[in-house]
Every structure is written in C-alpha cells, then in structure tokens.
Image 1: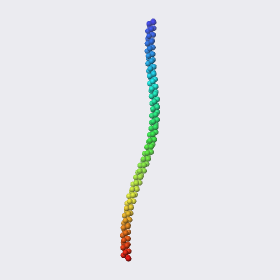
Image 2 (image 1 turned 30 degrees about the horizontal axis):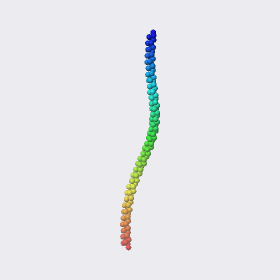
Image 3 (image 1 turned 135 degrees about the vertical axis):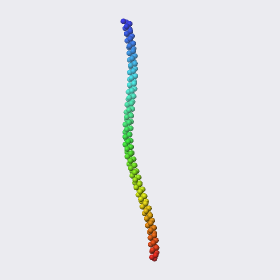
Image 4 (image 1 turned 90 degrees about the horizontal axis):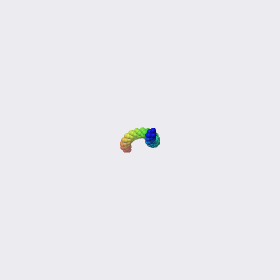
Length: 136
C-alpha cells in the first residue's frame, strides 16, 4: 500500500509539474496576446486619427474643387462675353473700313469733279476775258 501511495504521489507531483508548466506557458501566451492586442488597438487608434485627417483633407479638396469649378464657369462666361465683344468689334471695324473706302472713293470723285469744274471755270473765265476784250 505504501509503495502504491508513493507511486501515486509521484504521478500526482508529475501531473502538477506538467500543469504548472502548461499554466506558465498559457500565462506567457496570454501576456503575448495582450501585448499584441494593445499594439493592434494602438495602431487602430492611429489609423482612425489618420482617417479623420484624410476625410477632412478630402472635404477641403472637394470644397476647393467646387469653388474652382464655379470660378472656371465664371471665367468661361467672361471669355464668351469677350469673344462676342471681339466679334462685334471686328464687325464694327469692317463696317468702318467699308465706310472709309466709300468716303475715300467719294472724296476722290469730288476732287476730280472740283478739278474739272476749276478747269472749266478757268476756260470760261478766259473766254469771258477774250469776249470782253473784243467788246472794248
């Protein structure tokens, strides 16, 4: 009986030693898991802050994009207006050039008629002078 009891005590001691070793390993694994969890939680917190910053930047960029699109629309309208004004100015310029050509032609014609009238007047004056000379 005593030998059986010693054998059983030895087996129980072995089992206790094994369980204590398994417990120590389980505690190490649990501590390692806690460290890993803390690291992951820390990284998640950092990522959430980064995400919030990125979302803020995205909102700001979207607002700036809308602002620039509106500005582009205004500039486009101004450009169309300037193009229309330029087209009108070109048409007025062409009209003025046509008027200048017309007036230049009429001026030359009037100058030629004036020259002809002056020459005719000079001839008539000579004729008058000649006739008056004959009368005296």
